Image (cartoon, rainbow, N blue to C red):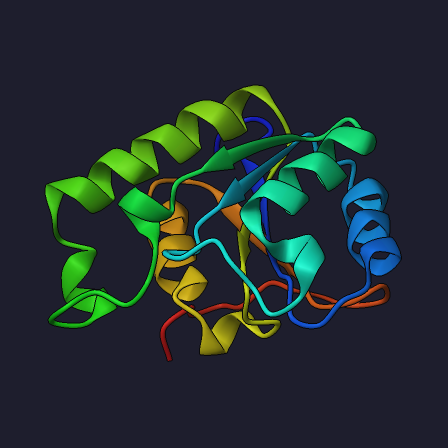
Length: 147
């Protein structure tokens, strides 16, 4: 495994602003990498424009990669992981995460119910450790992302 080859994963779910920013600060996140295909939400503070403002207030940068890594792909997400577009997204994640502590962000709280598990599996294949933040007291380091 590479030095400092750790990246986090987090789902917005219905978290409050305080819970969300608290989790980011607890894990010393510097960059949020948004992998939602459609960066909107029923919860106002998780809509892209509001989210970027919220993150700026706590000195955390925002990067949107939903165009390269977002879910809802025709043919299924697992098939999408074999495409050049997915590979390009992974390369960008690697570049950013190798320089600054980063978190992959999507809407689903539980990573095993989200396409983040496929992104995490690919990152693990190339030497990254992916730690999924569940809540204030729990993180998840699965042995096998897909099963």
